[in-house]
Length: 158
Image (cartoon, rainbow, N blue to C red):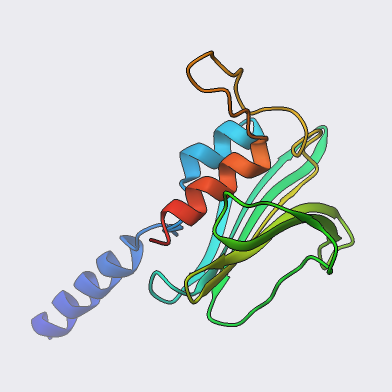
């Protein structure tokens, strides 16, 4: 009887101590900085070469999101003729798409070696046009918010 109670206590403690979701390609802190406050993360990750992470922030201004999909299959979300981005992996392109709820997403999709990525950001005004930080004379490259997110994701795929 005593062993059964001990097993019950241990299993309850283990269930309560589960670790929160983690995205291996982009941090929750970075998502909070981009989306303007606390976020919720849902992640389904199968190693470092496949998975989906979704960061979500609800506020008076609506729902802001960052979505990251990584995999071996080309799920390229941009049609042919989309703006090409040479500095973000191979065959990277930028376009506009919509998620399952019909929300407009600004997307960058491409490939790093044999790993495909799709990074989307929703309901963040000027995410593709306004630089993430002011350029200094030593760093003239003024990447947009979406490009900076994608740089971090691509960097974590190497």
